[in-house]
Image (cartoon, rainbow, N blue to C red; front, side, top):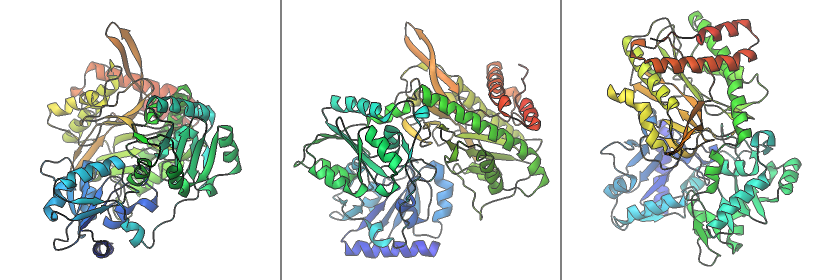
Length: 601
């Protein structure tokens, strides 16, 4: 594979000379600003071999013939391994001393040089910022050319899986009502239409789901929303008669995906665009010969993040279904590992098998991370046939996993002790992570606080001991949609989006010791009302995830009475919800033991 990557980079350098460009940038996105993309648009993986969800590859032609790849701390270890033997050097984002892409290109190029990027897959806001940064060094950004379109000869095709209707029972609001709410927000900004380009927003708006992106129930499309007429641009071969009828009933017409640019060129409406709209589409809409456009944060993002009553009920049902599978799997794991023959991949397959026994199961919400011992220190490790290792009755196993059910989406991490005894270091680290998890789950705060203001709760205990982690503490979770959902997040770097009632967010602090082990504990939380006072409205969190937390690695001398009480309350809730759903007495007995009440200190 390394030789293949070297050959592709050489071809790209030849292509650069033909197009009079001195460098080319290949990011991780598609035309819709997606975090996870169809195989057709996984161009950065194609050029570099690195398959993480985030990263940007840059290749320089000419005398220096340099190449570099930027990614975040989740992927430092994985990227180092993937890039070994290729022309790419790793650039660690947000690490002191790491240059930005523009700074690095300035060190490799000369004033007057030109850098290419595909405007069809680069967000307009990103392209504008990059162009400004490069212009400081006299370097021009060119967005008209797509190197992968010309060079990727065996490129995968786009999927043709049918688009499906999300039942109103779980959507809670029909598409016509959602469109009206969106147009109220659009018209307040002086616009008469909105082009929706993000796939999860389109799926939510129209109460449709698809299968175009691995683990994400979305479909490739654009949606031009208007008060009188809304048009869905998609591959019409994927739209059955039932969906056509359904859309017509909600005032939505269907056009072929390729016609969106022509439709926008011919429109004289004032169109709202989100900053994530790709540069090529934005250029059409901002053309002065058209009616006009306004770039504004999408109102759909916040609407989608605030779950209605039906969506909350659906999420809770999904958590119960997932909890049943997890209990069966955990009990199986305790007997299977000592027998021998189980590996990271085999236990992943067993969990998927147990989940699939539920008729509402639609697939995984992301590829399971089953990371044993030192693999647990790789934040987004995914076992492969080459890396897969057998499990033994010793050490820590980190499992981060989630599923899509027609009623909701799940995301959970548990770190499990395999064997009877943890080391002193394992116990200390595990307990610090658990303390952070509990602190965030118990937090009460004013409605509208940002996730950055809440992040300290999860880190305070470990900071006192000199530990930290590089990833975010929490992200929103969709309702039978993408497992990563904004706009709110809980993380150290500033994210202004407020958190309020109805929002889901994960609680997933961790500590990772390279070459030894990693610990992460994660639940999905629902933001709920707490109390009204003279100082305003206060909110808190309700755990949605239903699965026991492994208490065997806990160092109890580090735990407070309040933390033990939280564990008792959480485990009592897990038992109350799941016991009626378990029909195997052995599963019930295991759950009762795993959730038995702790005696306060």
